[in-house]
Length: 263
Image (cartoon, rainbow, N blue to C red):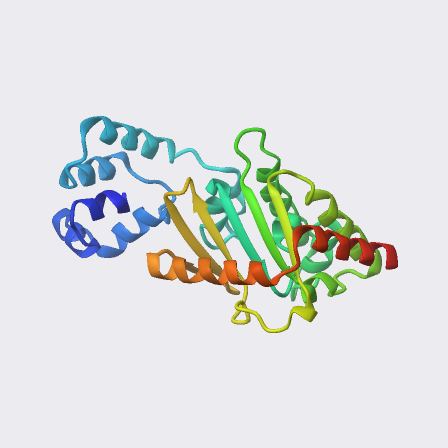
């Protein structure tokens, strides 16, 4: 919908004014922040954007399908934002992590140790968060069109003893095992590599069929979602520079193997 609006030469403010809406509604609709997109809204927008009838009908059908809730909705109390939905739709996931192992690559033991450290966390809350993360990981095993995951993990995150030596040994071995999958690449950013382009912090870049991109920066309460071309291009460049600094895929596996054998 954003691309159609731009093709029509309208800003969000102008489209909202024609529709008699608040600008924030246009933004939420384009960015997927509405839990359900009304087909009537899509039809109305397509009309002012002068979208051909066939494409309008297809978009309206997609809007009707959006009413079917995904598995994540029953965990809405612990999932404050739309990240899980975006991740599930992404075709390429570029994850740069400094503090922890990426969520999509964590073992159950690592997750339990991590969630158990949260202030006031009950056993039930820990289990629910564990269930959510395990369900998230299923996208990597999809038979049809699993996303490509490219993870760059700082050595500090690799070495941090979350849950103790046995938990970490299992976690390191898991990283070695999953790195053999055709859709997963893991590279370690070693201490010896020194300063790098990603010193400002970790982030995740999500690509959607080569058409749209979103950069996600996690915070305590959801996070920031960056989608402007300039912002996406800047973080894409950062990822590429960090990628060039990190150890190769083969060297990264060798490093993890030394950790497993020495644990």
